Image (cartoon, rainbow, N blue to C red; front, side, top):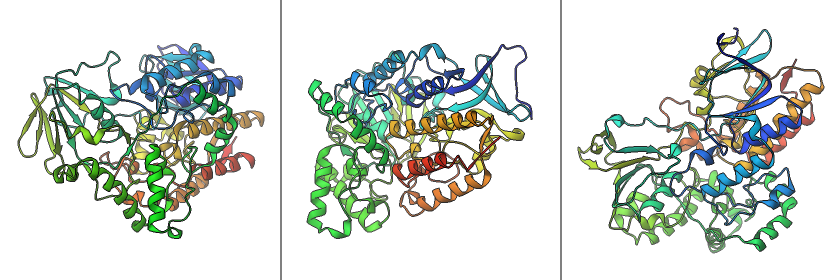
Length: 543
């Protein structure tokens, strides 16, 4: 099937197109320019930053430590930017990515305010034809999608949203100019990682805050010390150590499961390990304690009960609040675990009310506010939707992507989500992606660690194809099938697949159920990717 094109639009001919200008997109643009390709990046937003451009809601900050949420391709780049705290807030992270773009002179090859609506592959010439929302047609050999795993927000979740006479804002589409919440009656819908950051940040300034809680979360108190010249000099001196370390750990952090086997420790020794990690105030409590909690229900219960005990103490053992806010029907770590700063204490404030959406689900939005199934209308001035994303797959399926023979990725993934190592898809030649399903970047990795490794793998694969005179790269059906089978075998040994969460696509009606993220560990994933490259990409047909 010939690619769709608009005969009245000018045609831009390129060697490669990168979609997205976040952590992965910026690096991918840089790497493909180094190869000497005529490459351009297209970004829907008006600036660089990716998730740190769009997610500017109150309280937004990352929960990977600043010393490892970094680019590793340049020691000078690492040393020159000096974060001000362990977990910087959104404005600082956005500034950092703008600084990187300027330092590498990337802006001249980025088209801002340009959304790619369709990408059709032409079998006869082995090239992609892309059309932007603005009417530009692009002819390119390679298409690299760097759009992030959480970039397709679920905006229209409730009946009647358009009838609301106040303001409705999705956290992932927060206005650049901000939203004045002072003295307002505000509703926050959703208590995942994003909702928690919003709630703990705005509670002191709003007149009334109603939090609509459906799925309570386990959480870890964040310890966020300031960084000065000395602290950063210490990290800079460890650049090569940290760079090597993060590539081989389970989740791409500088910590790993080093506590030893659960069964070899007494209850008192386990408590010491858990308490130490709890006090560290990072995700190490989740990703560096005992891996058995992901496989063994009895271990999961013990670790979960440790966290529940901590949460009950902070809530003053209030029965109603404990029932509302402490999970009991899934284990610690099988959902995304947020870091927080005083979140639970928010519910002890006089101006805050938690609404139990398990008992009384949201029925619809009405002009005055939110109506629950008991008929009550919760009157508010502003509704903040922290209701998540069509994770992993949504960024790709919201584009009209058509591969060989006109096959539709949206249609195929509506039945079953499949990839080859999360970087290519059989039937879609010369289409590469980062942060896509069936790779650790879909959920279980410090994002810069895995995104950079994927960008480097994609770049090396394209370089290999060019060096050997090949124009087309596509995973074989057999290799994709073997990767999906391996992915599922690993996933099915964990408790993650027994829990409804966005990890499993459970938050999107009709989405095929499969663990979106590869759970075999970042180090193991990178070894397999490296082996493919070292052997000349046997799982990928080149012609």
